[in-house]
Image (cartoon, rainbow, N blue to C red):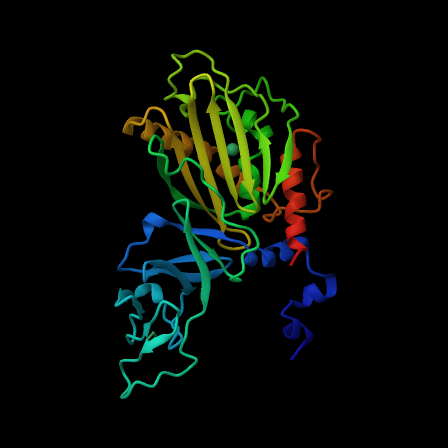
Length: 352
Ligand code: FES
Ligand code: CO
């Protein structure tokens, strides 16, 4: 056995040391990540998802979501091809049956009932919250699940945006979502104005497991799809936007208009499917214009914005967000959120 095998590291890591980005990727095993919308998982069929380069199977057994490695210990078949039977998961290949704890309870091809002890699945911590299924691979999440206020408020309408996959790391995707300086350039006329590109300084701080900051007062086109349904009669309104970034992968944007007593929320969370790949989940919520037409307008608007971001973010190199602040050039004030996010990620990378 080589030294590399013994310590589960690569030869390069022994020669050059483990990079911050490699450490962060390892550390992510200790946090909750979104893997699917709750609405995607029915009662009778399991589904597969990918988290941190591992294929997992999600299934509802005994009224709870369970997550296992998507691999039958008999012959390595994907259990997501199987089905639910008697509150157990049946493998599609030879019909082995696994209970809610992952223990094999039935091997149909054998005479007798003895089950080998090793016939059990690798199980992960799973939870259902905020309309999503969350998994923590280490089984001991360091931070609690993110909060989604108003979601169950009867006066509030929440729509689910189809999930999408990008070829970028989870932190690059998250950072892009809270990067104020790009609105005027990438989203000119949509979220920003190229003639007024300055980002005023704004407050930011840590509260528990969150980074909290508000939106600097920047010009935003009044007739953009985002604000279309507002009952403002076209008058300019004073908008207050607060952000909560639940470390390391979830953003809640809370836009309120005190004058009109109206609220708009974006809940955005990103699954690190691999080191350089992400799956993004979004809910859009509001307590005004609750009709279907506004749903469609909002989805179209969201599609427009992410379509503008896509080529930019997928082009960024290195694909993994550099946590060493000297690796890229930071601008005081306008890059403040990114700087604080990178700092905190680095702490997470070294706190395992
Ligand atoms: Fe699953 Fe044989 S591979 S039962
Ligand atoms: Co953008």
